[in-house]
Length: 247
Ligand code: BV8
Image 1 (cartoon, rainbow, N blue to C red):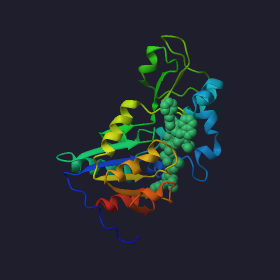
Image 2 (spheres, rainbow, N blue to C red):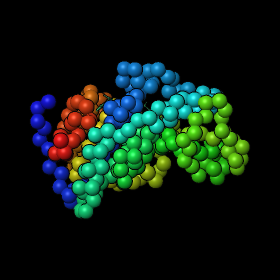
Image 3 (cartoon, rainbow, N blue to C red):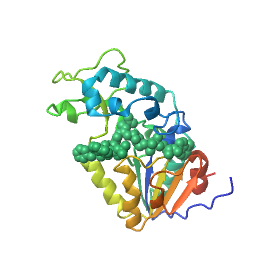
């Protein structure tokens, strides 16, 4: 790969990073829409919607439990680590916000701090009954629920993974913080995302309209490529450290 010019990010800059499943691919975690991806093998409607959970909660718990088990055997990779270095480089004077669509918690394990998990976290569980206080009290849960659906201790309703399914809104507080950051950042860097799922796929346009330098690192050209000023095609573990001058 030809030597990449490092991005001229200064400590006083404001940087928003958006990651998708592609940043965890080289840690061994399958992506969703590539060849062999999760939504090629499984029906997203049946496994990642409230309707699918209502119809067959155990099948959904088996899907999320298999992913919990697989993710626990994976480690953060050089791309996750590069974002930790970028965050500490900017900690003194700049602003750094890591927005992730991923639920695998690899950014936390790598050491990133200022993270917004807009699609939730696979290692948290909460009550599925919106009228129960357990709905607002997700708790850490690494257990596998393959044989029976766990039930809420408060109201007896089925418990669910604390992730955002299709047709469910992103937490309004998180979305507000993302939108605020997009409107004032100098850099918007997206890594490993196909630009398919909204509202995340629209973030680049908000940042670009507000004058940010929009950069994409991805293995292939995604749906929303037209909104990026710069596109570096290839594996995040090689390209991101090079762009940040860490290689
Ligand atoms: C919302 C759950 C509104 C967690 C996921 C009808 C009703 C309501 C909404 C809609 C609707 N129709 C459409 C919508 C909007 C919908 C949507 O966008 N649908 C799409 C499919 C068109 N969005 C929603 O429903 C969202 N909510 O809009 O609510 C609302 C408002 C008020 C009231 C009610 C509703 C919720 C979206 C969240 C859905 N949850 N998952 C989980 O199980 O993980 S989606 C799933 O997609 C994951 O979260 C994932 O993170 C996300 C995005 O995918 P990517 O991360 O981009 O992964 P993908 O595989 O696609 O791409 C990976 C890329 O990496 C590839 O391009 C590949 O080339 C690259 N790559 C691979 N290896 C590498 C690499 N790059 C670099 N290096 C490598 N080594």
